[in-house]
Image (cartoon, rainbow, N blue to C red; front, side, top):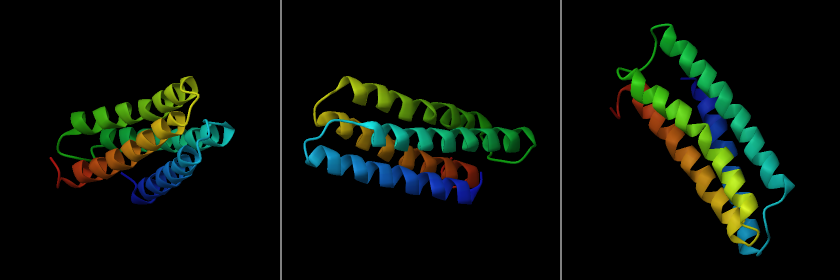
Length: 121
């Protein structure tokens, strides 16, 4: 796994979570800036998935590649599910859903780093 890309993903996810938290506290519905942030996060996650799969296919990577690949594929669903649910919820809880989704992405990236390094298997 590329540490630089993982760090960028975590930072973007936490910034998007903070922005969404401010929106939720201000009683605002989800808007275009939230979708843009989730789109950027999704593009970064796709890049991470491609890099991770290529490295695992090239005999680099964790001791349990199935778990790592499972995380790579599952994490791609989180921003999309958060965006869909956030758009359906037109109250202040829409951005709250985005907060949870972005925090979940950050935690999953940390977990993937642990699996990659062999410390969390």
